[in-house]
Length: 300
Image (cartoon, one colour):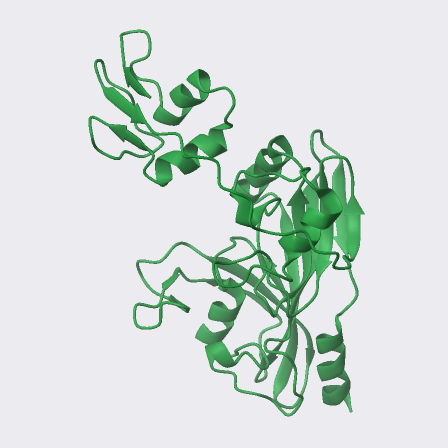
């Protein structure tokens, strides 16, 4: 598709304009197309926020639909909340949130496809059907799932505005002296180990609130509230203050005396506004098996 901008459309945002002329695609979908290089302005790639100029030439190559290669699987789901537009599941430790190019089975998305079929948002692509945010494989707990694109956009806006409250439980190494404090350190990718993140000056702003629940001889049980939601944020921030999450071998904790499947970290509390109104949903789950196992040992 090739379009030339006239005086009626100049000064419009690129993503807004393309949403107008392609009503079958949501604005978020259009933004993904732009981000992935499917849209060129005068043979150059621009951002979604680009303001159109008179006589700009837009080349918009709508991608061919991706053949669905992710198979539904009858995997039991622990559903904590559900309505017509969304659900919240308690993801177990050890389960990938969504498939990757190398792992396409036994993920949360495989299970969601079996339960919901086509009633899942596709804004983030077929591999991430319904997924608004993610948890690391070995982090358990609450995840919001969107059943349609409008619900996805409604909830994603809350995430962007930081109006959703997300709290985690963790056991970390060492004794934290302060009862509560904030970690406000930017996070970016580790240039030497691309699979890891790190605190770095040119990283994205990242905020974590820390509150001590219980202290032990050489460990601390904490509650962590995410203000932002960067990749590995809690794990990176706790490592940065020399209190890595218990058994988080990726970020330097090593294996403690109590063996578990990697980091002892759980997303246990969510507070958000239900689509599409002003009703507040507040959810909380009990400590998972890893938390209970390590606490039992530390308390004994």
